[in-house]
Figure: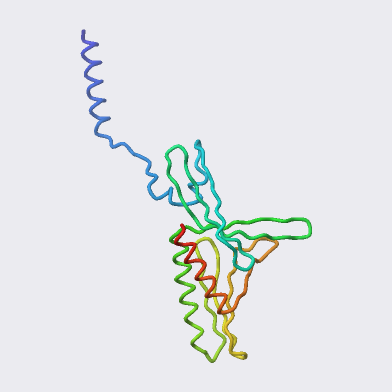
Length: 184
């Protein structure tokens, strides 16, 4: 009888202590907004849909939609695909930008676009780099009094992937990115 009472006493005490210890829940809020985390989920089926949006120079723009079939959550990103070729190898590389990153890129390009009205006395450069490593900017060459614009994708060991364009090309790229941003 004593053993039963003591056992019951310990069960009640441990139950009370366990109830007071806060349980730690892993939070996935915000993590699933990230393309890399979403696309590498374990133990779930992920559907990937690629919708072609168009091309600018040698860049192929795509809307990439990922859908988790277990909970019906989804994520859309802008994909920028390039093709690189060496003597022995042809490679495709896709860089992804989330919607907020596309918006920041558009804003940066619009700021860069406003600079040609100024004609500095010296060579001047502007640059902006996204979280994904895409660099864009402009260079002013004082001797010839011209602006040059560029977009450079993260370098690989065999290709720099730099694209140069004019002021009209910059306006075309901004317009294209705005359209793509609306479709995300």
